[in-house]
Length: 589
Image (cartoon, rainbow, N blue to C red):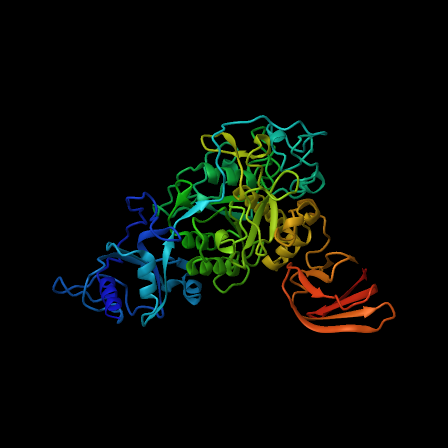
């Protein structure tokens, strides 16, 4: 306990009222501390107080040795850790400060110190102290893209028929419409984008996508017209330098192009939500910069919250922690805030003109071919949409992580086959190939944008839950292509055409994995309308009830029922939940 009190003494020696930005201190290992699991950033931790300080946290020393902060647990003599700075993780949010405080985000602080003690050890010590609700280190993150030494590769064979837009490099974009002409490809193994729906739904400017990544090259000739701009002329925020000055970064620019490169402008590539070439069409890309390279440490949580407070309803994240660990609580709090308040006013009511009441947060899984959920964090956090990567033939990409936490899959490209990678915008006004879950995630973000355009724009009350119902319910079943990963690639492959051809955004979904049962397990899946505490009954062909059980079913997760005691024959499964009852027949062999 003495050591813990000494640490708190160090907290008292802080300069929290400083306007200094988040700067990356140089260390012997470069950007990160490699001495402990989790790739912990040295010299900083995050602390959540149990209650708000009585006054601003500032240095207040009368004799040069004793520092009083007004926080009882911090006002202890001693400066062992040599605290240099302390400031809020989530800065004052202006007109949204009240809801920030209501959610307790104002209680999170970044604490910088100079002592050689590792941040993980310090966090463990601090977490048990009176007045401290939580303490955790800051973890370094990296993109979910795979780099290659190759510079450029040939396009796939030209597809049959005319392309909807005049962008000249679409023959390299098999992920939009796969002709199946290459040996490594399968016709139709793409995002399911059809001209029929694309003519009408190709991106609305009221939909803002926060790209939490490196800085987008906002001057790229194929992106500039779809870049978000605030009232001050800023295109986002740099959370490394704490300024509006963005540094163009290849990975972020690649991700941005997949979502909203300008369509039908006679330049470069087409994109899913980049408009139709008419002025003002296309979604808007907000750059929330947390990286200057493929690895980084910055205020990731604040970047996510920034999107919600500045009009974004989609939060795109193709990054994750460098090593296996649980999702940090600060990131969880920011994600929860975005889902609850994006598109909403101070009280959580949908803003006039907002396309959705609440927001959706998407994360790419990792590229380690692992089933470990902690390897994929923050993609493993239940409220987010976790995206896995596919090859151009609907098989799991060799590198992609997988598991029960995955929600949906999308093209991420081959790692070893040149033309099977993902072609998109790059820095210096150029274009290039990348592959990885990093590429799969923005394709799903763009699909969300078109779903919101159809069901949310001009139709108040559309929610993230309804969006996910449509997104997951329309996915292509890819189990047959992935027999070793059944139930581990989410709802299937994203299918934009099918999602936008649905007549209603509120139809209940009930699905049996198979109606001809040759195993001892009946598997079923429902959407959020039918999810929750329900009742399952089975009836024989004569109408006799043979099974009845209360069940708890999660949306779009396979629910398995052991039917080994049933004899062969025809049966009806009846499922009731939330006032709705559905039935479907099956045969047990």
